Structures are given as structure tokens and as C-alpha cells.
Length: 534
Figure (tube, rainbow, N blue to C red):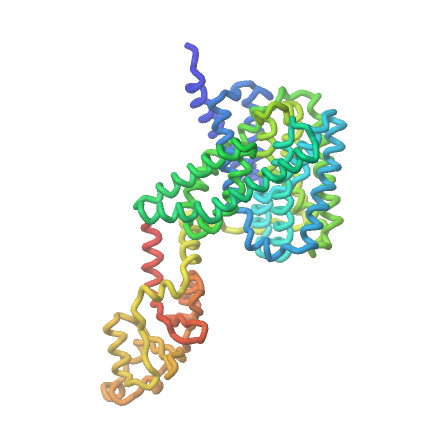
């Protein structure tokens, strides 16, 4: 009985997902880049070796969706415009432009000697010459450099190279097959500028408001999730209509929705699970399905791509490291990391339906294998300079909880609760009664200007006689030091202060140091439990 393409798709997708995730896990345990394992699975199961799985229309559709969602997640997770703006400067921009331009020229010359086509050589050069921020972010986390000055400098450098590569690829994508004249170049540049501007306006200003409206009028978070997925698909379609690749539209959309995701960790976690659990392994395994038959003829081209791609990155990264204040070899290997957006652009170049081939299957196979070898080698070389630090990664639930508390300010927590305070000169009995009435283990003591000066702990009054309670003022009782936080402090900091100080109550103050509210230890616990339940 002959199987239909839909029935085969179910089998192919299931087989690819299982073996891709197993291979990724095996590579992860060997401290190797996981996605290379998924690519190998695709090569072995696909036409490259066994020929068990082939690219049918349904598989191709899922791979196209995978590219869009992976680039969207890359934009939302990896590219922090606010953080990068701090590092922007003439020195940074000149260094990045010089580095990427020279890398593209070197690789393009080598690619032309291999492929004998100017267009395909430049396309290959633009992809092989770029760096990938996603794998670098994981590498910096493994080596404990995420929050260091050197780690931030390398990451900013790589992100700027990645954005430059995306813009160059978009330009080549639009220019391919068209007459190259000053007018056509100016027209395409204007078209790209308008498309990016429209994506920025919609992604930064309009879409977040739409999502917030949906969130406020629907009880289920799935509504927000559905609208967001729809926006990725519809804007991708609109981009294709005007000649702008849908995957690149998704990347820019993710960049400008980053802030929305940061304030909604549950939605972010769902999208990550959807993308990394389904689309990522399927996408990287799918990369292997486009390979030609693996023969010795592929070896020289692959090794050339590997040597020129890695060599040019290391050489320029080493040479320009002083511009960024990074140790030369660490910068050289850090900017050589690949295996994220470059892979998505490569399969986009192969499958583009624009009337001209940006790259053929043989060239694709050589470039993809070369990138995979670089993706394996660069992190190993980087770790020689900076060994792996064993870090216990928080679970998804802990990440969501942490994000919720980071996005909530101390003032926002305090405003939802009654303020438990006592004047420094009021009778001690009144202050103690106020604590009993509000079921609080203590009160913040304030002076005549409403500024916190101490903490009254209720248990210290229990052993006092009735006479002492009636005659003593608050300032005459045993008092603990006041624990004070600014109103803009994240709620996560409150939880840490309760653990460190041991006091039952924290004072929240404004810019003038005056009390605006108090937070009890149990209220933070209630907030945590509420978040867990949600």
C-alpha cells in the first residue's frame, strides 16, 4: 500500500524528532555543541547516507516555520538593544564593520575558487563570515563570563556582526537576479529601510499594545500566544510580498518584543518550549536532509570552508581584540562561534524561490559541514582559555518565578499591603497593639519626617511587664536596625534581604528617603505561592 505524503510526513517528523533529541543529548553530555548531533542525524537518515527520509512539501513547510520561530526567539533572547546601546561607539562600530567586511572578502574569494560563481561566492561569504550570538551566549554561561566585562564585550561584538550579516544577506536576497545599477541598489536599500522601519514601528509600538489588550480581555494566556504566533506568520508573509525574507522579519520582530517577553515569563517559557522542543531539533535535523550524497568529492570543499572560515575569524578577532579590551585568544575564539542564525540563512539561501539560485545543493552541503566543524571546534578552543564552570541551571518553574519577582518593584508590592509602622515617640503599647491587630511580627519605626530609623520586633515586647508597656516610648524599647529599600528595587531583592537580615518587615522609601510602604516576610511568600499556582 502506497503511503500519501501526509502519512509519510507524520512518520518522518516523528523519527527525526526522536533521533535528533537523542543525538543532541549525547553531544551535550560530551560537552559538544548539541545541534551538530541533530544535523548528523539528518544527514544519515536523509539522502546523504541512508535515504530513509526525504524532503517532501509538508516537511519543507515545517522547516520554513522552524527558521522563522528560531530567528524570532534569537531576536527576543539574544539581542538586547538597551544593553548594546551602552557599548555603542565609533570604535565598536568601526571594528565590527572592518572585521566582518574583511571576513566576507576573504571567504568570498575562497568560495569563488571553489564554486566559480560570483553570486554564490558572496552569499557563502556573507554566511560563513558571520558569527552567531545564540551558541556564544550558552558558551559564556558555561564558562562563567556572562556578566563579566570581557563576556559583554565579546557578546556585543558578535551581535553586531550578526545584525550586519542579516542586513547584507537581505540585500543580496533582494538584489539577486536583478540588474546591478546605482538605481536598483538605491531602490533596494530604500525598500529594505522602509521594511525594517515598518517592522520596528509595528513590533515596538503597535504589537505590544495589541497583545496587552488581548491579555486584559481574555482569561487564558493562550490568547496572547496565538496572536503572537499569528503576527510572526502574517508579518513574514507581508515581508515576502515586498521582497523581504520572512525569517529576517521574524528576527527583527523578536528584537522589539524582548521587553514584552521579559515582563511575561510564562508566555516566554511557553514559546521557548514550543520552539526548542519541536522546531529546533526538527530544523537542525532538517538541515541534513538537503545534503547531496556524502562522497570524497565533498571533503576538499568542506575542509576549505572550515579552514578559511575559522582562520579568518580567529585572525581578525585576535588582531582587533584590543579595540574591545578583551584577551586576544579569548576574543579570537569567541567571535568564531557559529551555528545559529547562519544556519537559518543558509537553508533560506538554498530554498529561496526568487528565480535564481543563491546556492546549490553541493555548495550548501560543503558550507553546512564547514559551519558544523567550526561550531564544534571554536567552543573547544575557547574553553582551553576559559574552562567550563559547573553551574546548576534553574528549572523552568524557577526561571518563571525569578522573572516575575524581578519585574515587580518593591513599591508595587507595598502598595497592595497595609503599612505597618510606628512613630518613634509614641507609646510602646500602641505600637505593639498595632502589630497584633495587623498580624505582623514587627513594625517599621519612623521619625518626625516619616523616615525609617529602626525596626520594632514584636517578640521583644512579649517579656515586658504591663508597666513597661504603658510607660515606655518606642525609642526606649529594644530596636533592631531598619532594613530599607528604594521603591524601584525589584521584589526579588526583598526575598534576599529577608533571608540575609532576619527581620520580619522591610521599609520601602521614595527618592527622599520617606516611607511609602512596608513589606512583611509572609507577603513575599504569598506572592511566590500565587505565581507558582498561576
